[in-house]
Amino acid sequence: MLKPSAENIELAFHFIYRITQRFGFEKRIYIKPHFMLRITCLFILLLIFYGCEKELSASGNNYLSLNDFFNKNQIPSQLFTVNAINGGAFKSNNGAVLHVMANSFVDQAGQSVTGTLEIQFKEIYEAYDMILNNKVTMSDGLPLVSGGEFYIDATLQGKELRLAPGKILEIDLPPSAVNLDQMQVFNGQTDNMGNINWKPNPDPNNTVARRDSGMTLNYNIYFDTATQFWLNCDQFEIPPFASYTVMPGNCPDIDSTMVFVDFTGKNAAVTMYRGNNVFSNAHLMADQATIIALCYKNNRFYSSFITTTLADNQSSTLNFSETTEAEFKNRIKALK
Image 1 (cartoon, rainbow, N blue to C red):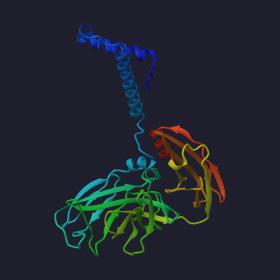
Image 2 (cartoon, one colour):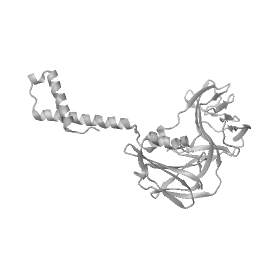
Image 3 (spheres, rainbow, N blue to C red):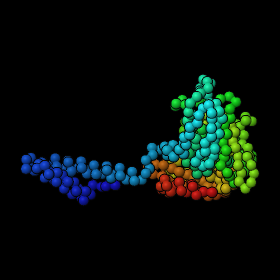
Image 4 (cartoon, helix red, strand yellow):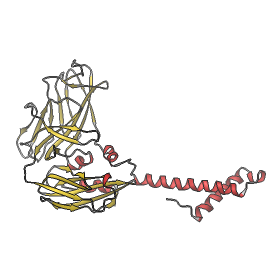
């Protein structure tokens, strides 16, 4: 950031003098010293302001809050079109195929629709994206292991649609080395802060089924949930669980901090709950994990990473250091 140094003051005087020469002011008017000083001070303030703006822009941390950071790092929607009467199928960027049956959608009054539908589609498979999108794998506080999270929204000329009675959508999941035989369909319930809670769908039409066998496992998800929703292919993790506490340590601002837990070797990530100046969770997998904390204060990021084996009634203390957004993302992307 620029400071009102002797060099800057000299620069300001020189700048103003050149202006008076350029327009011949020194031959026609007399500029009083105190007026000249005011102009110089104003110019110096402009230099300082410009320096601050330049420094902030260079940092790239133009977020209003930590929630704003997560909101602006949401995975982008993929947009597809399909004929409402004929239906169709489309393939996503990661190889999932969404099948839309003929006449699958109706409007909010339950009437059939015609024309070209727009379908927004999001897909999340890795814990990295689950953390950045704040779509962690928890159901009423219990940890889940995920085979993929998906968002679907169908509209016609900007108006929301819903699935017609008796119709089912199908997603062919990309080939995976993960066994999903015990997984089921969960529906996501989000609050106004973007936090999600996954609820198991008891409808037998909503299933995860294997297509074929071989070295890679191929699965389909069948579901008949209304549109504009998140769904997840999940299974509950079995006990033992660990009740665990994370102490804030040198946390710059506990109210602007989120703490996640990434479980080593499992496609699962959960949050720790903040309360009484600590972070805690009574239902963590008693297994090896990495505790990830991110704080955002005064346009700067601070992070803490702790790799540990979670055990019941134990705790860890966070140790924050300043980081960049890119460094934080690279750290969580490297977790396995």
